Image 1: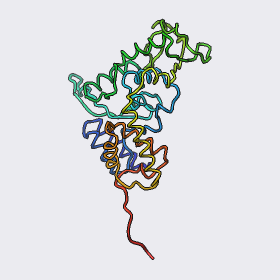
Image 2: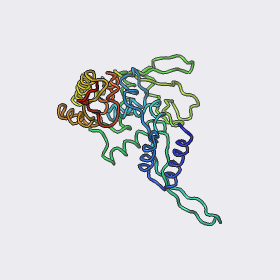
Image 3: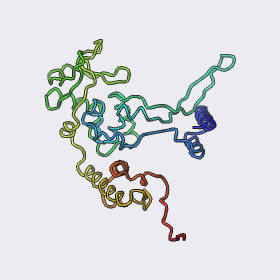
Image 4: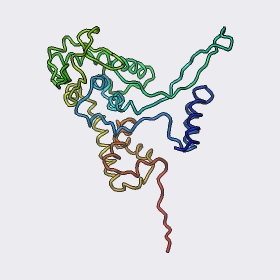
Length: 297
C-alpha cells in the first residue's frame, strides 16, 4: 500500500474516532480510493467448523445453544483474530483549565475480543433483543453449559485435554462432577476451584460428531443448505471462470427451489461451493460480463 493510501486510511479512522464521519462514510471513502474495507471478516469456507474433528468448549456451547454453524464458526480464536468492527464510544476529557469535562463521542475500529462462555451469554441477549436469534436456537448458553456438563459427567460425551504433565488424555466422566467452567484472561478454563493456581486440563476438546449426535441440527434446514450447495457446485463447474447471472438472482432461485433456506444458509452454501468447485469467477463482485456477439478479423 502506498504512503498516500496509508495516510488516507489513518485520516479516515481518526475522523470516525472524532465523530466527524460515520463508519459507513469512512468505508465508502476507503472503497472509492481503492482501500480494503476497515471492518473485516473472513469467508465461511476458510473456517467451516465442519472441517474440524474437535471443537473447543466455547464452540460446543454455541452449537448446543443455537445449532447454527455460522455462530459456531464466529467463536473460533483463529477466525476472531482476523475480524475487526466499528464500536461506538463516549468519553470525557478535562478542558484547558481542568475544572470541567468535555464530552466526546466517536467510532473506534477494534479487533474482535476472544470468545468465552460469558461472552456467549451477552451475545445471546443481544441476538434476542435485536431479533437476530436464529430459528434453530434451542437453549441459552447458560442452559447449554448445564447440558454439556451433564452429558460429560454421565459419560455420554467424551472430552480430551492435556494434563499437567503435558500428555494428551481422555478426561474421565467422574472428573466432570467436580470440574467447573471459569473465565480467565477472556478464555474458558476448567478447574476444581476458582482459587486453584493451575488448570488440571488445558486445551480441552470435544469430538464434533459426538456433539452433533447428541444435539442434532435442524434436519430440514440443514438438508436445504446441503442441497443448495450441491446445486451451486454443479452450476459453478459448468462455468468456473464466468458467473452467468448476478448473485442475487441465484439467491432468489435457490430460495424458490429450497423453500426453507435462510439468507445466512445461502451465503454459507455459496462460499462453500466456490471453495469446493474452485470457481474463482463466481467470487468476483458486481454484475457479470456479457459475451459480445462481435468479432474481429
